Length: 487
Image 1 (cartoon, rainbow, N blue to C red):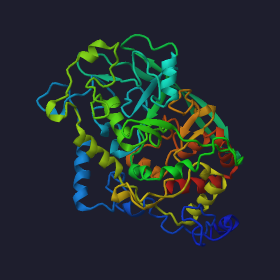
Image 2: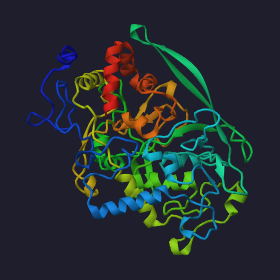
Image 3: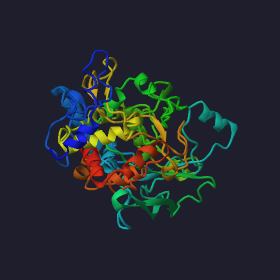
């Protein structure tokens, strides 16, 4: 009975989907009880295994035994430590010459979330800096306008700063972060302390950065549910876009439109902090190429991110081998890693039907958070793998770009996204970050040290929802956080 009064005030009518003609994906406005199937956010693909540090590393629960073998082999390649070429193990050589990590697992530890360096003795292996410059010519402007390129790379350092290099070569530089404390006054006399980061690069290995360099930090995101996000119908994503805010609700999401080398057409981006990749395959192969310097079918250069001005880097031996399609990670390897990534299962909800969580859910919906964090979808039945077909899923994202205000702005465009826009991050599994990764750093650069700080950084289109949280009583904020932690 502790929260009965709050629940009664926020309960209006029966659950969505209980009346003829109302879609099961319609957001509910009954918070007196959990919705049907809400405990299983990935439908039948949801796993119900023990909640421990491996909770993000299980296969889709609806996967056949035969396909689970491929999942485990893909996991092996995901964990593979790549070595310098030439090596006796040609299936594993070709690292770098410039790189950020030696394996996928090094950034996505336990398939979870990365973090910024925690003090001078901590490395940045699960975080790096994106680099770009404004278009310098009509040709470069046309590349951006036609969606054939998301960014124009720094002419020397490329599209990301690699802070490691193989023997005999210099790393590109070292990311450094300075924090400034910002105080936010909440209701009930509560005070929150945020940290505002500033980024720079030290120990540059190849001369100065471009005079108009644009830096943007990236923390490795958690991996669960990616195949299900890809299985959301494109039209369901586009239908949520309201770039001109025609309904006057203050929210004007829009898709990032990016070129797909896989499908040879412009597509809505879904993956990456600014939705710069249209598919799991392109996101994965881009990471092979950029993060580890490994050649793959979509990026066949054995020199990885080495630019034309890094001549010694481009002339170094590569691991491109004739018996492996003249690549370092041939199609079979790339496909198995993508299969693994698509099938990392979302865990079942915890305490989803408790009174405190339901009270927090009501506040989450009432505050307008679902204006961007769309609760649920039905995935496509055709053209997707059996594990992702026809599932009712609850990722809490619209996969669209939103202006998040000056506080979160990186001032670096990516595709259609401008310097203030970010993709709505999926929330499923977010409350398990401390269990999996032993920390609670959130947002694209890990500046938020807990979920409340992450909420308080929201601005722009999310300003109204953020201000509602500030105005809540301390007890209401606790309910809200209990709900988010249960996802």
